[in-house]
Image (cartoon, rainbow, N blue to C red; front, top):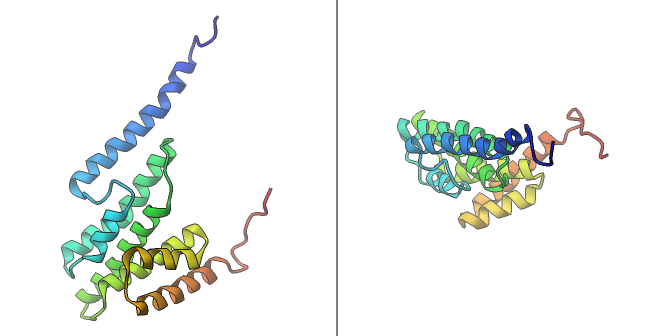
Length: 173
């Protein structure tokens, strides 16, 4: 048997088939939610502009569920990419969903402010860098200064909650 002969050909097809399947799922879902594909900036922008309607709430919750799922499938299939932009898309959509739900419940809250706070919080957690997450999202959106302060407080709380002693970390190898 010569080199390159035999069953390894099936292994060579796994990467393109996996990436193709993830792309097909993402493409199909994007027919319903056009903000799903891409790096996440479109999802964050949509979150910042969300009206206080039940339709907007359904879209935001769908992004919160589907964006990490499809990103994980795509990266797990072998595609290249990172978690930076998907993190702030997820956080922005979650924060906006909370803001829309609060407005629908009768509370007057700023949906864009909560979207920025959510984006900064999730980015701070996924990157394990609260100052970076806060400043990066604030710089990206150019939000008001009071939002930066709120984002810093929330990111600090997230850092504290995720670094407590009852959440042991694995020692470095």
